[in-house]
Amino acid sequence: MSDGNTRILGIETSCDETAASVVENGKKILSNVVVSQIDIFAEYGGVIPEVAARSHLEAIQPVINKALKDAGCTWNDIDAIAVTHAPGLLGSLLIGTLTARTLAILHNKPLYAVHHLKSHIYANWLETETEPEFPLLSLVVSGGHTQILYMPRHDEFEIIGTTHDDAIGECFDKVAKILGLPYPGGPAIAKAAKNGDPNKYKLPHPKVENLDFSFSGLKTAVLRAVQKELNLPISHPSHDLKSHLTKKQVADFAASFEKTAVDILSEKLALAREKYPETKSLVIAGGVSANKALREKLNDAFFPDPKLSGDNGAMVAAAAYYEIKAGVAETDPYKLNIYPRISIEAK
Image 1 (cartoon, rainbow, N blue to C red):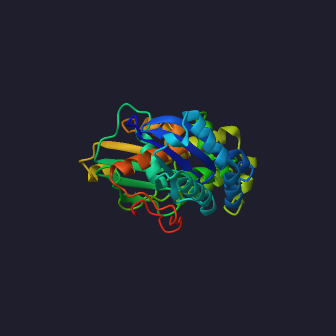
Image 2: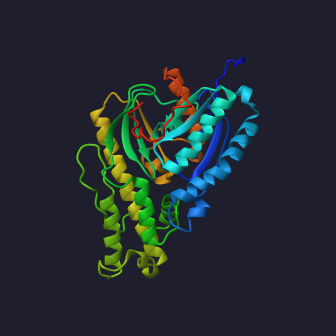
Image 3: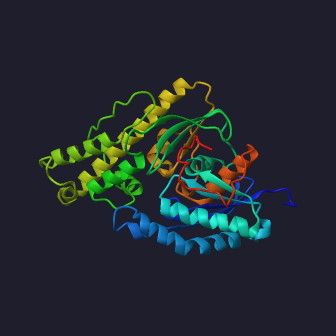
């Protein structure tokens, strides 16, 4: 642009948020519009992919228009379009990528298809005075992912730890369901845990080799602990346990689970730091990065602003900006396919 700044429109539709944002130079947020479907899915306790896709279809163009208006930009002011490419719900991704491809062609703008987890990491470069230093370790924690990545420089990633089963956010959701707490489980458990005793129930730390994780056993351990506390057999259905729990028991279980989950993440990161002593920064990313207990435990790490922990278009635009700086080629809007690229290591 004539003023020397690079303005990117970021579009995010990987799950149940329809989001668009205009970001300048990978750092300054000019607008950030998010339309969430949480109210729709709270009744069901989880996301229904077909419903999510239809909701994106209704919201996507108004969201983009508002993002441009809030930023005070016309299409002449936009230098590139970035869109979440993978991973995510296929129907939801399809709405975002088709929209971005069409707009790139109509307005003759470069298109960048960005990996969702990379975007979460780059939320840590937004609206901050102090940037993470390389090489760094990044812990990505969300409803669908739990990974530790090593980054020697911008746009280079090596997965050094991952979950064997449930992601940490998924585990929060399932434990919340056992306790009768609403969806999404992360905020609900954190709220209940404020009034609970984190040392009331001793929950196991899964024994997983190296830097990998496993959370399915922790979820089951909570279920068995609740059944034992209520003196009910293991055959008693999990969906009925909430009717037998007192508010105090719910708070204690929430606090004990939250503490255990945070401790597990912290222990693995400590091990990662031992294995990669050259690490200069630790970066936390993903929806679970908004958790207050995790932020207090890892108080020397970089965390995004809580409003940027969840899915948003600003993080997509930021990731694309650093792809451009790293020399990544733009995406051909006529050939973009949402299916093959599911690993953050792939290009």
